[in-house]
Length: 121
Image (cartoon, rainbow, N blue to C red; front, side):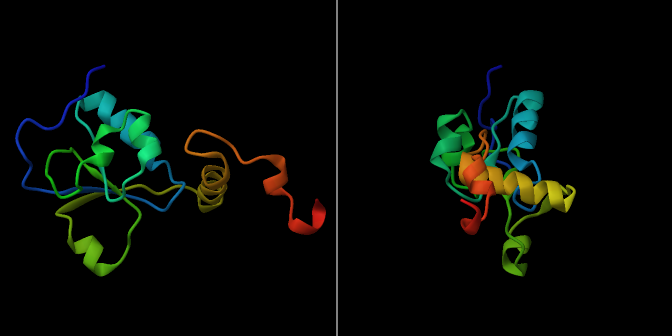
């Protein structure tokens, strides 16, 4: 499906907020497929850009994306947005997913060696 930037710059910034590992990247993929518009990010992640998330390189305040991924939770960062979609996931599953992302990438898995403690190798 073709995706594009919003035809006119949005005056409202919509956060797609979550704890890391809660499924934000998957939600972005579904939102892009459902709407046809790119999602943005508070961060620049070249690996996500290379996987087709073209809004990843657009400045998060540009107003050209339908929502903006963020894991930030400070007052200043929260107040930078006009509205939010808050994603909540079982904390255990979110931590497991974040561990896999850290050691295996956005679509990979941590190796068995990563799951073993340093004293168990």
